[in-house]
Amino acid sequence: MENARPPSTGATITRGAALRKGAYLTGTLAAASALATLAPSRVWALQLALLPQDQSDTLVAFAQVLYPHANLPTAVYAMVPKDLDAKAEKDPKTASLIASGCADLDKAAGGSFAKAAPDVQLTAVKGGQGTDFFNLVRGQCITSIYNNDMAFAHFGYQGASWNQGGYLHRGFQDLTWLPNPPLDASPKPWA
Image (cartoon, rainbow, N blue to C red; front, side, top):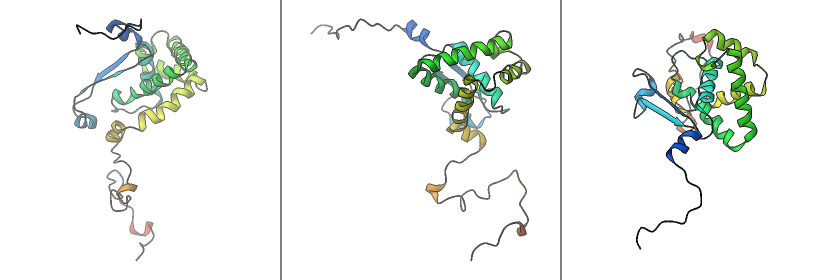
């Protein structure tokens, strides 16, 4: 058989069409960050299927305003639009809510919310408190930002301990940022 080809379905996906469909969030990890020591490369990228670049950038900036951490890499915050993109792909109402919420943030910021000054961003976010969009993004931030290995590495969380016998003999006394309590502050251990 010469150059056998599967029958055409009539749908063609070109590289350009694939690139126009969604956004790519990209960045680099700081060399001194905890994530850089774990990652195979300091460069990261996330492809989104539905959300355009401007909405993705707005969602990252919104997450950074809601849950600010001075040295938390943008790669962790980028999990928010990635996870919201997956929800929007399944539910057109969610996609519409994200689009209108991002447009409202841009309007409140007097242009691009993602590029606005921090005080302008904070004012815009406060103005949207209680809206469905605000609640959607805030709820997604909690799991997207704090429930992943990158955040665990950044914050020094060693992960679950139940499958390793608990924390009593594995990390219970690892606190370095608090002084040791006096001996009389705790009950005597069982014999």
